[in-house]
Image (cartoon, rainbow, N blue to C red; front, side, top):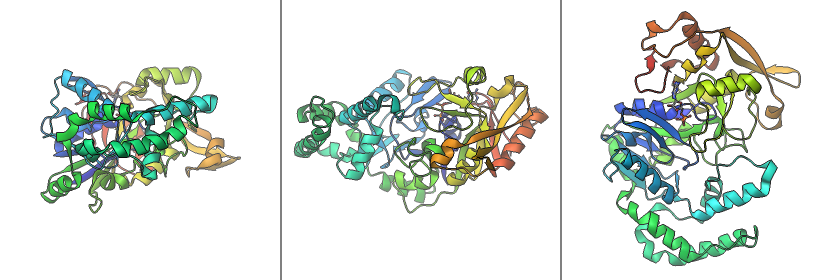
Length: 423
Ligand code: GDP
């Protein structure tokens, strides 16, 4: 059974919590794209953990976790993340963490370039997390990056690193006027933060093919949501990689395999970190109340998130591009304080109504059309379908019809057991 678990919206849908729940049923959990630019928050009986790079299955001893070739890995960050998990009592060994030899290394100069460019843009910035993700993916496609497998041969790497450093300094020093980067420092960084992963690096294609052929179940875990996908998202306010389900086998190492199902994580309201068009956005007190109720602050950055009502137009599009076969609806309990629950049912663009998600300048001009459904009160104690009040069932049924996909799970709290299985 090969399943992808992906975000339907702008990210931060509560994927970490759902992967933590669902990964129980899977032998292997794989991250297939992105780096440490986003974070999953998982609360379980061992505590609260923020995962930026590691697959969420890392919190279970019996799950094997894979970081696929589609990922970009900041070695220093990985060291810190693993150390924090170990301090929290989590075991991380080569038996249950496999890192692809084809995954790309995110170097300190990628982070530096990200910061230099954001500073140059000043008021016009894109809202980068400054973790080097766009520069490292750009270099990947320029074919000038180091990959995890190179760490196995570090002693023979100096010449290549020197060539890359020389090329990078054309931008760092001659372009931005910053002090040049140095080969010696880069080699020292690779040694300090890279060599510890030697035993974890392997051919994940061989590992995953064997696992899938042996009938093992594999869960592919994405970062961010459909609307941040480099091709299908709100470009240029997207991440720098493909996070949609169709990329899962490619970014993991098994391009010839087909997914059996795609679980779309969809939030009962909207939230978004950083810049870019966000048609359903609330401002003022309405925004503050929703942000407070949902605790909407970035897991990786602590930034307050922009919030708004559920957006049918964007979510229907998200479900379509992800090819979701079922949905897990999250954070519905957060809306318990509302007497009437707002929903964006259409966009108005240049005086015309549409339910087709637009792109480019048309998206920037879109205005939300809001309708209200009945409020449903506190749902946080509900565990069975029968526990849900009629108004909540109506809200779920309304969303299913609006986005064209069935909702299998309704999450009513951050704790592992705080959910209702609908069928
Ligand atoms: P992710 O990156 O998609 O995992 O999203 P976040 O990092 O924003 O995590 C979502 C946050 O909401 C975490 O603090 C979760 O513990 C919490 N959370 C997840 N699902 C629910 C839910 O159904 N209700 C409530 N109240 N909180 C939730």
